[in-house]
Length: 385
Image (tube, rainbow, N blue to C red; front, side, top):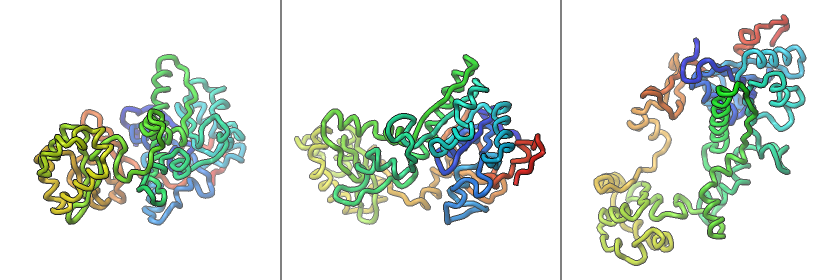
């Protein structure tokens, strides 16, 4: 099936594994690009075996990151296969995206400098670990390492308890997103000049970008942010509270909303209380404020509070488990969960719509090497196993 979508007509070669480059490649594929995933012929992408659970022949993790793609297997040490891949890139590829370990692709002439020497129009994106420069540039990296090294773990969780990582692989996923932003920016420039470029991003730079606000707060104040649980350091009240039966989050992010919250809670006098009358005072006195709010919230059920907060115009939401998330009418209405063409799997779509239509789920994640023959065409007659 021919791809359709805003990136239709582009060919992308993904020299990727695990999460970051595959997520970036999948995003481009869902948006219409023809994405060729290049895998090791022995075991393929490591993520194929990252389970259980497994789903339709590979791990659920792999399946969630590789729909809409074609898979070819290439043994880089086989000179004929390597040459076929280089020829394919030279004749057909617009973009290459890679997240292999530092230095590997240079050994085989598959790095950006080597490929762009013969094809200056090529756009080549490196998703590194610690970045292209600096003393750690050759060190490999994974998502939890970056959450630790960037300081994200130092502000995640509750004070006095063991550090924890953010549950989803936010560094990997966001690095894939940044790769798309960089590639599309380079594509716009190429459309004007005819010349491609080499784009660099990394897991560490991505992690540092997540720390944009906390780093500014530290540099402005000289203090080191602590772990604050569900709160943020600059606003109060802005956290999870426990009702009589379950949890909800209340986010009164300005003085007007705090005033509305006071009315809903039945304590209008808090609006003029010197401890709470402005956000800086509420932040300074957050401990006593949170204790006072918790004492009131804990008296009644969550659904009752949600109804009253909604009626009062105070931003709030229940804390949901994942099974509740996927079944919620709002999730269903948005159509973010998309069923495969044959109904075998349901995977998350991209959070974008064009003229009110979200790009669809048209092609299942590929079997290992499923498209090697059709893509590389065996123009030298060699055998791909």
